[in-house]
Length: 144
Image 1 (tube, rainbow, N blue to C red):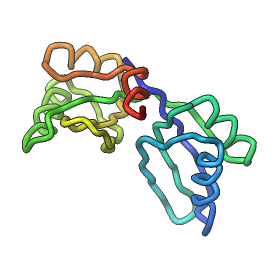
Image 2: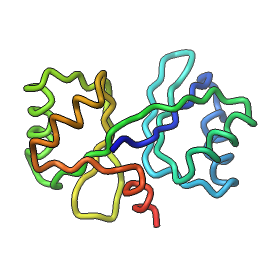
Image 3: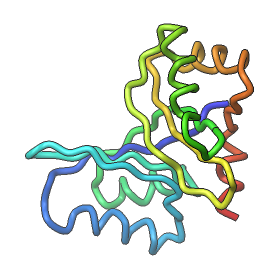
Image 4: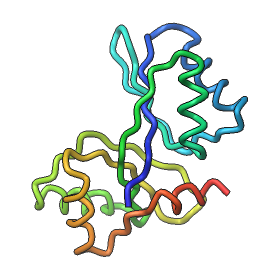
């Protein structure tokens, strides 16, 4: 039920983000979800892409530092209060959300990507609710 996320660490320089996105585009890889965290010297780009292995290869060839992280993609109703209900489940189960970002989809529901200190416990806590944790295959199928 976990989704592969690619993380790219790069120096905070003009054009470097463009180089990364262009390299993926030239390779025919679609970025499905993306978040950028930065400091004055470097940035961390976290992405869900349509072809993880190919993206890793392309980026490493361009001298980017790349890592794999497992995250959860959670489907919730796109209505006020839905995110709060899911976060309450995590709080009640004493799960730490390290970071999260939204996921664009053509579906009616909202998709949120979460990174946890204990992803297996997060999955277990959500099994007790009506919240759906998507598989990597289900997430990738959204790009089609």
